[in-house]
Image (tube, rainbow, N blue to C red; front, side, top):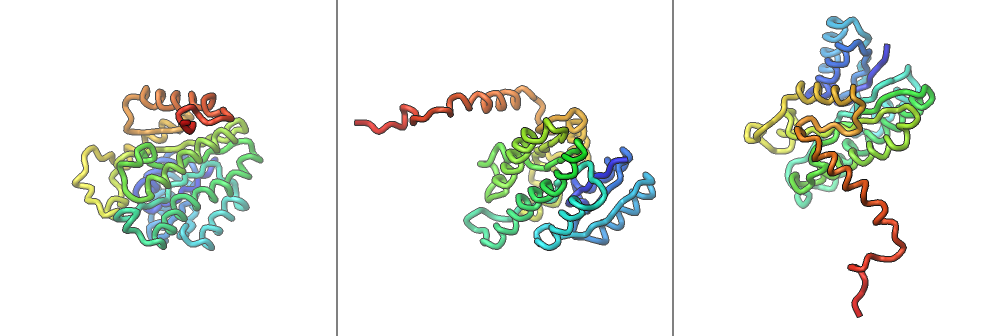
Length: 259
């Protein structure tokens, strides 16, 4: 029986992943700051699905606590699926954010998932199989639509996932980036946005169910609200058309100084 480790498991997307994976028969390691919420969820899932559930309280913005989770991935019993879900946003704009808040968000949205993926990967490569799921955001593709550095951190998650997939995919490791658009989670309140003011907000369970369909299909990038897959295919085709045009030792003519 495989085991999945889920960060941010005490609410929202993380809790939904826990319930869905438990229903599929996976044992779980649940990571979040709230011990009480994790214990309640673990009791529910043990009772409902007769699986093993390990509770690992940790604040991933605290280096020592992040290291505890990394050590669990690196040296504990095998983790077959890593769900890098924990993340957050900040209220206001880049200009109004305090440096300490910016550093905090980068630690949570960028540093933590990177180091946890690194910790999980060694064992996966040794076994020749495993899955890493990184929860990003559709604003990775639309940075103008969201103020501050949130979209930048999620752009990193997308490109990190794509680069990692290119590196370890041939060695049996599946990497999926999930890009939700507006989803009904607590992140909106923490960002200073009233979710009731938004249109076309996806419910968390619908988002996770769609992400798991993409997971089963081994998609590299899953965008649950995107109805027209041809748009993503065209975006990817344009991106993949760039390399030959970038392999030039001389600047393009339009950047040459005029006499």
